Amino acid sequence: MDERVTQFRIGVMVLATFIVLVILMVMFGRGSRLLQATKTVHVAVHAAPGVTKDTPVRKSGVLIGRVSSVDLQADGSVVISLNVDSDQPVLKTEVCRIDSKLLGDAELNFFLPRNVPAGTEFLEDGDVIPGIVAADPMDVVGDLQGSLSEAIDSVAATSRDLGEVVRQVGHLLEANEQRINAIVVKAEQTLDTVRDTAGNANSVIGDPQVKAQLAEAIGEIPQILRETRQTVTRMNETIALVDRNLQNMEGFTRPLGERGQFMVARLEQGVEKLDKMMDQMVAFSTALNNSNGTLGRMVNDPELYDNLNRAVSEIEAISRDIRPILSDARTFSDRIARHPEVLGLGGAMQRSPGTKGVPSLLTPR
Image 1 (tube, rainbow, N blue to C red):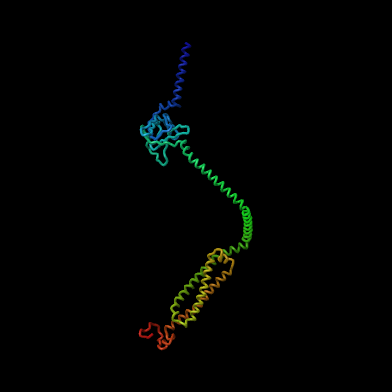
Image 2 (cartoon, rainbow, N blue to C red; image 1 turned 90 degrees about the vertical axis):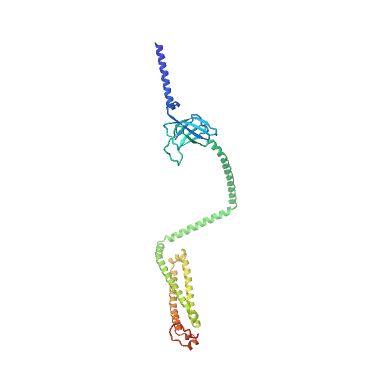
C-alpha cells in the first residue's frame, strides 16, 4: 500500500514538473512561437552575411519573428524567408536591413526610411520585398585603415613643417633680439604718450566751461549752415545775373571798338573779381566738405565767418559796380541804334531820323 502511494506521488511530481517545464518553454522559449500565428515574408538581397535559420527579425528593437530559411539563387542573389508574427503590423513602405555585429552575429531590422510616407498597406503572407545589407563594421575599419595611414603621414609632415617654422622663428628672434627690444621700448613710450594725450584731452573736455562752449557751438551749427546755404544761393543768383549780362554785352563788344575800351577794362576787372570770388568759393566748399577743416574751425574761429561776410560784401559791391556799366552799355547801344552817324564820317554825311528800324536796301553802306 505504501509503495503504491509513493509511486503515485512520484508520478504526480513528474507530471507536474513536465507541465511546468512546458509552460516555461511556451512563455520564455522558442516554444512560445508554436502557438503564435505567423506569416511568411521573403526578402531578396544580394548577400546575407551572418544570416542563418532562426536569426532574429526586429522592428524598432522589438522581436517580431525569425528567419525560417536562407536560399541561394542561380544568379548569386539570396532570398531570406521570414516568419513574422501576424499581429505585428509591418508596412510595405518599410525596408528590411541586415545588420552585422562585431562578433559576427546578424539580425534583420524593419524601418521606415526618412522622407517616405508611412502608407496604409501592410505586408501579407507570401510577399517578396527587396532588402539592403548594412556595411560590416570590420570592412569599414579596413576601408578606414588606408585613409588613417594617409592622415597620420599628413600629420607627421605637418608636424615637421611646423617644427621647421618654429626653428626659423627662433633664429629670426635671436638675430633681431636688439631690434625687437628697441621696438618694445618704443611701443612703451608710444603708449605712455598716448596715455598722456588721452589724459590731457580728458582734462580739457572734462572742463565744464569747455563743455558749455562745445554745446553752444554745436547749437549754432544749424544756423551757420542755413546762413551758408542762403549765401550760396545768393552767389548762384549773382553768377547767373552776371552770366546773362555778359551774354547781353557780347553783342556790343565788336561794334564798340576803341570807344568801348574803358568799359571792357571795367568788365575785365569785374571778371577778375568774380574769378577771385569763385576761387574763394571753391576753397570754402572744400573746407566745408572736410569734417576736420574749416567747418570744425568755424565753431571756435570767428575769423572764417568774418571772411565769408567780407566775400559776400565784395559780391554785392561787384553787383553794384556792374549795374551802372550795364546801364551805360544799354544807353550807348540805344544811342548808336538811333544815331549811327556818331560812329564815323559816313554816318555824319547821312543823317538818321533817330528812329530804330531796318535800314533801307537803297542806303549805301
